Image 1 (cartoon, rainbow, N blue to C red):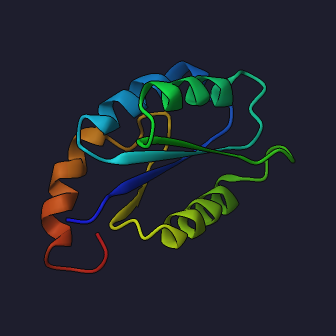
Image 2 (spheres, rainbow, N blue to C red; image 1 turned 180 degrees about the vertical axis):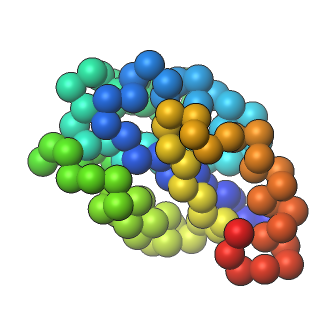
Length: 115
């Protein structure tokens, strides 16, 4: 399977992001955090994780402030497509999407285009 990527749009997710990224990496995916200039230090945490796991944790900082989840996701998908990631997932940083479901998605995506 090509390299899977999980896009995580963030704004003030410092309390959750490290735990989420660590869980995601356990499923052999890469993570792209698209941060809207969070004042709580989310991007600094991701930068540190990127140094801990180079090539597995990526950060896109959108310096203009809180632009919204939808545009963050679109920017993340553009970034992923330019780098040939496949499959591409999007997850919320607050654990409303359960990372433990990824193996089920990997299985289903073998037979269909969208899960």
